[in-house]
Image (cartoon, rainbow, N blue to C red; front, side, top):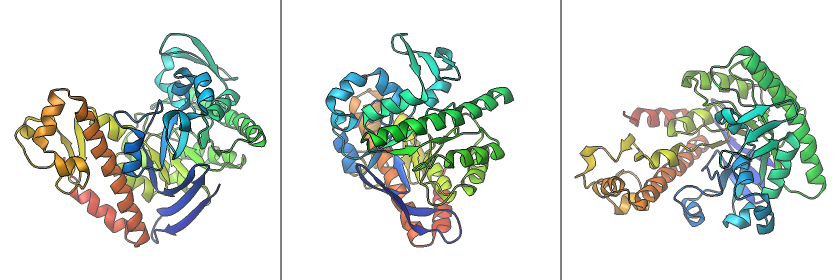
Length: 372
């Protein structure tokens, strides 16, 4: 299990790499579709394979609650349970600490929360979250963290920073014990620090002392202005060693892909392409398109004339608009497939541009084509 850089943009931080996981090689940069509960909404695992995704993201918090560890253990882990042969990275549940703040209590030892499903009480510790991921059998494990919102009072940010670092050290020890017991996985502790570049650098320094396999960059896309996202991300990646893969958590519109890779990011995940598909929004070569718009009711052109996916080859905007308005389930599958195809093709275009030494030019060309 290793990471190697294959090529770099001569004028910046963008790079091509290969991450080797227990379930095979992942060419980077890579976008991971989100399979929170062991499924990418409206698609099958055969669909993911056809689209060419070799890595997905699932969530420890949600899988712990449902289907539960007993079922996953008896199934032989998430890969066998969901019938997926690619690599899986699992989030630690730290984001839910923020998004479900009304249901949890943060203590030095860990997090006590009420299930959003039935109100039952549960405790997550840095050690138990490693145990959970061992049962899930994912390829890349993250550490329990505290993800502060934006804006965040200084006292709350300080506590989140301190707890995340202390928990990362405990998680690292628990991870090493699992490896000694025969587990095969990579450890991706999470660099937090809010939107303070010095704090981010301090966090990265402490995390690197744990000899991680990769670095997860958390606490972005939590309500901050996009300009601030890229400013702090740029300051963060500057202090990271090139030898470690960098995973930017929860960021991933088409524009985000280009900007994050420009700043040296290797892995990304985001619900954006699948979530907006269920709301009738399609990513196209010229920007966003809302299929529910009345202008498309009698538009018999392809969804995106420049797209080669089966949806664009076979179905018209008018037909897709009809399906969405009629709430036919196939509408969600078609739009989700198309959006993920766009994301995959975007990543391939980014890789080619880096390989050819024209990343900056290709990025400008992409942005110039985007219209409101």
